[in-house]
Amino acid sequence: MGKDKLKRFAEIATFSNVVQLEAGQPYKGQWASEFFKNNHPVVLELACGKGEYTVNLARMFPEKNFIGIDYKGNRIWRGAKTAIEDGVTNVGFLRIQIESLLDYFADGEVDEIWITFPDPQPQISREKKRLTAPRFLEKYKQLLKPGGFVNLKTDNDGIHAYTAEKIEELGLKLHIRTEDLYKSPYADEVLSIKTYYEKKYLQDNKNINYLKFSFE
Image (cartoon, rainbow, N blue to C red):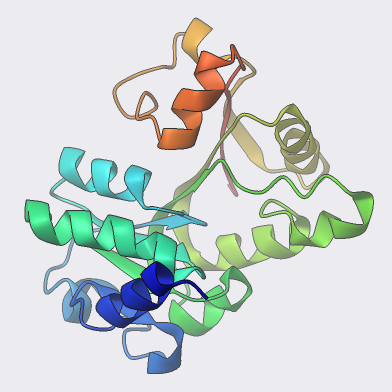
């Protein structure tokens, strides 16, 4: 492991806005009241990477709490550090495997979920690892409050089409679907947040897909 990664791992251990997997589940069912010290809605970004979307959503919606979730601490470091330096207090980061979400959040604790540019896991043998595979959708259904939304924003046409198929197969409620977000009427201020990688995709003239759905 490089020196920079080691330094970042050591630094995030001191960040008040980061909870690491070895910490147990101190906030399950109490993220708003105990971690954020308020009663505001809780929104998750899964596989948040450097946390660009998480932090920017938090800036836009100070009346909500945002938690970026990723396993790679050297990526979380960037978003957590930016939030601390810029005084964005309604954002936190959780370093865990997404498979263990139900260990860290209570049923109905989450108001909304964002999945932005996830690993598409294109091989058929890796379908279960896709963040919109049925086993993950079951977890999201359990975590979300009634009427809570899941948002998928991706440059990958395959994971977009796969997710749309699962929405139909499972009888979920599709609210928005577009294969070219920036040529659609849906590209508002929120959906126009661009991560480092999205900017690169757009420079390469790659279309950006978006889906919004719920479980009822």
